[in-house]
Image 1: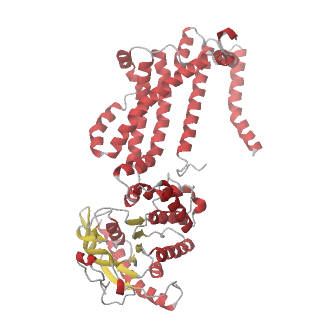
Image 2 (image 1 turned 180 degrees about the horizontal axis):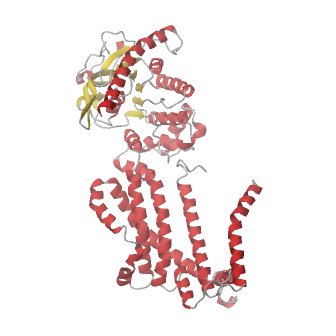
Length: 273
Length: 293
């Protein structure tokens, strides 16, 4: 078991390590301009510098713990994450009840669906000019854009989830004496959660894409802002270090959401643990 | 040997014989429990309609175990669904316990072939569901659920989700969920149809044990002749389109029944002839449907 896992790890690492070696050799041999493509070693050094605290530890300025987390990257990550969370909460918070209504009432569906179909194909990024016009600069336009990015995946999946509830569960609940409200709360809602949660997962993914773009135009911190700022100074090593951080954070978020889904859907077929 | 039509008022009378032509073990104190009067059920289909049930008159007594038997498409499930209140007869009416059936309700517990357990609830939560709706106190629910888990030998599975149970176990949970409400009528729509023969037999025995202990009125839909003889007090054979009552016969074999006995097999042969004739009609019509389409 242990050796199998080691083998899998070795197989997975072989190609990336080879690529890094080739990349490093090309840079060391002077085949590429370091301004265009810095060496992996330079990127790693810059990544570390981005992560580490900017100043030496000074007890006069507060606790050691706070100092440890005073690096620029951690501040940027927290700022980006905060926008993702708030934007997603706003978008999903609106989409979920609307989706539940649209999924359970044909009347509401017929009235609202055409509008949603018209708005849905507009990419969140196309709202940038409007968001600046409406909200100026700062967190507000960023949250607005992220909310739009998260809104539609959650909405569409919630509608589909409610509409696809197997009729036999509703029949069983009715014959057990459940009222319409009870059926909605205890049958339709849980039966729709697999759809809703996969919508949420897509929504968070979209939110994470949108936050990077939003930070490039509206605010002056966050991971998206940082890599654009690095370009102004021709710090290509920092651009790549920032990109790697964005990737790592995205992966972490997705792993977290996936973990949460598996827990919430532990009853679901096809998710045997 | 058809059942005599009963006026709806018959429900209020104390003793109404099931059918005069046949001796009935329970006839001396038979109380009508489910009264189906003049029921037709017509389904619209593209380019016409299908008469699933026609002129069904059927009185089922308190505590009776009745099997509705017939080939696919004979309307036996349609009749059961009408008694359950899931669908409304096109004509006629159904009265259960003196009340006209308008919608599904906990007085008529339903066990489905597909189990219909809520997959997001554990075994214990599934069984407790109906009791919670009823507004029973937490402690009383716990006690009742424990009792049912014991009765159906499910105690060690109480915190499992349905996906982790075998088909037989799932159907035990579905039966427990219906029994929890202690409804006087239990409706069963081919409940053991998807189970293997051994599991099937053990659940049939389990069901008979529960029936004997609780005295419920059971209406059980099946297409298995053997199963109907093994279980029922009375077998109602339905015809294929339109669904009418072809034969209504009482099974007087002593219980527990021995499916190898001569009497059992004689009855099986008789019923087989009846059902096979309907099966042939079913196949003919299906074939015609294929060629005219």
